[in-house]
Image (cartoon, rainbow over all chains, first blue to last red):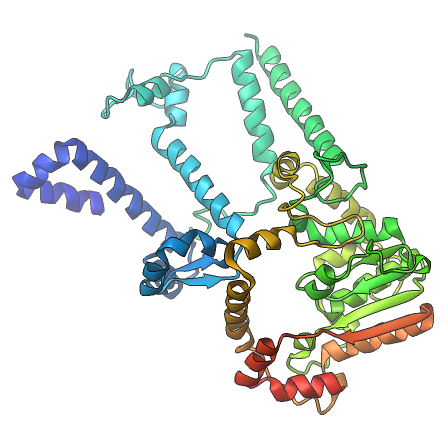
Length: 183
Length: 300
């Protein structure tokens, strides 16, 4: 829906269309897509509409901002701003917050820049009519290098697969319901 | 590359990693599950041990087989060092089985586990009246749903050998070696060995609160207490304020009664004490309307 609205807006306005084709427009498109998907996930996961709206309210800062008390020292230089913004301190673990932020950064990098399974397996026709070369809209050297990674039957890939299988298996204890479990 | 060769490499990798993870978990022993000897500067401190507090407390308790047992919540856990010089030789070995956030049921279960190993001479229980601020509950202990952590104890709630324990030991072995958390905690342990700052639990169950010292230096005690009191104020505002006309209608009092009966029957001395509280903490109880319950609960 968001995509169609965005395309329709670009058709009607040459300024939006021009922006869409620019580097900033591409970045904006990424951000818009990402936020739309994250908002959509809330409705998949929440038990009902009320809960989803409550979660979205919390995500947008409607319930205020709470920071683990153990990290309060980091905000001492901007204590005035902290009070003005109504930031409060909670009993939550500070290291959990740091760990979560690190995970988000690592996983975002994988989601944005790592090749997907179709790209990895493209030498073995994983789908019909798959293009010969991946699209390289950004023309970025790093992305280009990553997009050339492809699976072959080799000791290196066997070890990589083994490591991933091991990590996946030992992570099973961190229970997380399948995203589409309500469907 | 032939498929069989590919799978041999893959399987070999998985088996190697499984062996390495088990070796890491046992050698570093981040949760003191195995009682592995420690190497100063490498594994002496256990900064991630509170990710598996009950595993650490239970298996350590059973290894130490204490003559003096300390029970209670975080105030006891950080307040009594079993290896402190004040303990007489006759009290040794002392074990601090207090659990942060634990209530009187936790203390009762730890007492039962200790009694199943050896009859302690002395049991010291720190009472926190806030643990008693509950709604009346007439459900007997045996009928209350069991906590998953109880399956690791030597005896069940009736005092019989716990049939779930052998399976739970295997679950704990896997939890402390072949999980992503165990691997990460095992890897992190050697890198967090600062005697002044790293959190840890001693072999005798004591939390020296190293990490708190760092926070105190950074923020000052006044600020720390203010933050903590603000959190307590929010938390306690949701507590009921019972009059305790019939104490036995409250689960906490019944657990306490059980502890007293068990200790009287199986140990030589029982020391019950009410935690000392700061004046501002008492003021806060008064302000949020819990003072009457606090006084009545203490009197009972």
